[in-house]
Image (cartoon, rainbow, N blue to C red):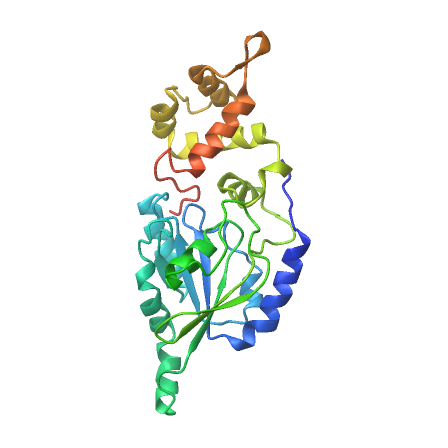
Length: 282
């Protein structure tokens, strides 16, 4: 399954980020903790001109905590700040102000030395579609400052959001990159809903997710779908087993694997399979 997606408004978003980078002090990049590598846009490193980076691991409530710990350590080793959050419950969001000020401590010290104590810090919030960026901003702002949706591509234009304690955020549209050279990355984005389901074959996507889950979390499949996943089973075999257990049939008694794929994706995205990370670091 060759996945590519690059709507026109994302071209405008890239241009907007480039035009405003000189106005900001730091970058806050929101990623999905279940896929912290795939949910990063590699183009942002060049586009953001080496600005200090705070990585926000969102949806930690759905991610494997041990995997998150390893990923956070890796980003810190690269000189980035890390904040772990769950925007739905608000967990971890209160630490944003301190995390930004820690990241910019040297710059703040220089401002203070020049008599510019209390100078407003401006942070650009970036992230690919559907990582919970707008929900995170609303939590930080303590009001509905950004439009939210469970569908990718809602935020279309930039907006400045004033916070208390001398912080301003620049919200930006979610940006993906023009093509996905690594199809594993593309699949991970599709599994979590960062790419619209309408452009893909859902049955194939569901089968591929089944295969991946069987490799990393076979016990979760056993518990949720009452199947006995064998190590060498194909994704379609597992979809059929799960469809049979759920009683998903179409005319003629044929197993409805497409319906099972839709249910699997919905339940994975909704956290009903437990805390799962699809990218595992050694």
